Length: 232
Image (cartoon, rainbow, N blue to C red):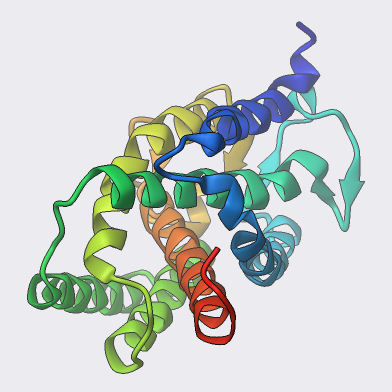
């Protein structure tokens, strides 16, 4: 295998099983793709702008040995695909848990978790506001958490937190590979300079905000369908 296909193959493998298993009779995930697409487009635009700024500000960079070389606005094609494949796979995890696992975190506990996370984000912003990755990362998650705390949404936050915990398994695999090779190279002057293995600590909250935002969009578009049309 030519090494320049490494990041592309990671993207393909990320969505391979969610696509293959989308036709599971209990989950019927393929019927929900139409609710995923608009949210991925909306959130993807936000994170790609963020990504572009980070690239030109040298917050991170990409190892040319492991990408095919097609770039848009200085971003590798594989990096753009990342904001499609990862949310798709994480929403699949969320839907599988909803279909097969009836365990849920109560509203009280999920709200407490959100408040604790929000306080943590504010603390991190106070301590690491000079590091661009830390600043944008924790402020983005803080804004999304505030929205969920004060705005009524169709997303069950307890189910989100369960899905996030499960998503940490593929997260450590994918991000571990990306940062260990490395395919994505981080400038430690722009982050906390603390890593879990080879993964920057902030990446855990980057993933959380990305998944949470996509699930908010997913449930929003699905609820609109259920309100204005027949359930699919």
